[in-house]
Image (cartoon, rainbow, N blue to C red; front, side):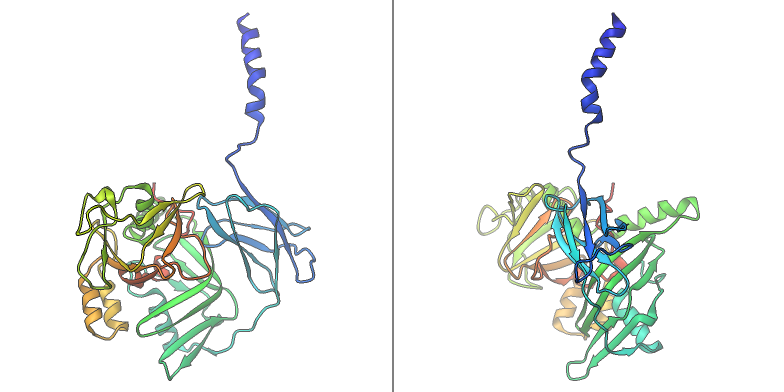
Length: 369
């Protein structure tokens, strides 16, 4: 009788045991040429993650979705322009990525002096920059705008560098960097490949260094804001008149701070999408991290690339402080701290976060435990 009861229970449970996990989501689609023909063997990856796969003979692909809500799926194939397609957790099946003809990069190859300048501008003085190795310097091309004292760097192929301190080999497709003495910006489609540990302590060191890099970052701030743990994770924020201005009042209720306007006006609002919030404000917010994260050497980068001025002196004196505004007055962020992609820049920043470079990049599918 006992055995029959167990068998009956097992029969009842079988449909649930065999049913697919409803929470598991997949990215699926096809990569085709400009004339609609399937492309076999194309690499497909989620931008700024370690997640990748390849297309089959019919140009089809599938892989798990990342944890963050909105992301870009990128296809790379020889003879075609790297192509990205924005999607999200709820709309990432039956995608068709249509490749385009390649565009040739113009410019002059970098000599030794220009390569040294590029590496300094791209990786800066951040904590884990010194061990980075550029693996494909031959793909870099530069143009110099003498009138504006600005430099632009483009590539003829994938820009690849290794970061042994964080344990990643990083490939950026369609890489482009530009700027002048005030600051540099870059863009491209980025794939992280985890390095293979040669010693047992490698993984421990990588995780420790990744946690150090994450602490005090923009993603750390946004994740803490979404979790309602600003105070617990040692963050503070104030509305201010502009960069370098004195604090006014806190826009975060959990900080228990009130200013001249009484109850703080919130900067985070709910959104209809699951796990997504809206940050919304006009003007500037001063954000400070009181924890142990961040790199204390970042003022060196200001001194090297930002001529001494009242502004640079203010920024150099404000350790772990960033001033942020929203050019379009709002941005959307998910609970992992990732800002959802948009056509316009979501934030404008001056201060500590401004000087985070390629050496500080972490894949978006990595989160501290």
